[in-house]
Image 1 (cartoon, rainbow, N blue to C red):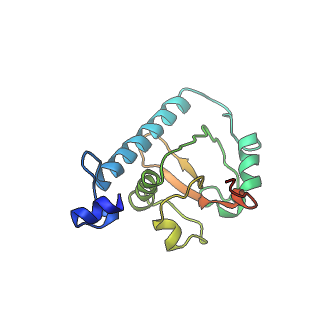
Image 2 (tube, one colour):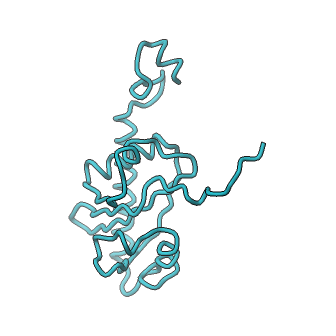
Length: 164
């Protein structure tokens, strides 16, 4: 990709290979995906009453609290819980797409961030096996409120060595 960009006389991050998507097209695709997921969640949760799987005390909240400093970071819910958590969604993709999705969450939807995140984490491509956790509060008729718990987390790789 870098060689193709050089040959075209362009910078690599802004270069669009023949037949490829521009960065704006990737961001639009990420926005459409996120909006679709939020609509699905609102549609599903609107049809149910009571406690959802994942509500406080469930295995998801416990798992998040064990691995990530959830209770220390949450601003959406001052009690440190995740009331009424309706869905857990795993998104797996390549780093450039994830950076576009994160860019949409951060710049367009004004996602709140942990104080420990610096400019490097915010602008870098998601590393291989990097984990980012977001809590999204979506309701019919309003933009989602988003809380970033962590971004590009890699501590799960500590002590892992590559096999040759």
